[in-house]
Length: 109
Image (tube, rainbow, N blue to C red; front, side, top):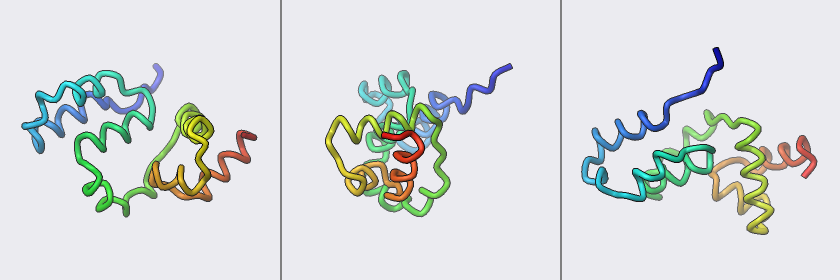
């Protein structure tokens, strides 16, 4: 049996029910929960729910993030599509510039 990963729909629904019940009626948030496919979707959803200030406070936990190959390629494609340099992309995704450089070397982009 294949491991499918975390049930993000359940996780985010529980977070909203417990901490932000006023946001349960927000159509954009609920629609985003239904269509989580990549790390980019998760980051966008976190910004919708918690806002920018909350994300800035949690920057200490960024070392624990994990990315699958599809997510890495999506991040690199986002960088290319928006013509961003490593610093701009790293700031947007709250990650290390060195990580981006390493990914670019590995995937030869």
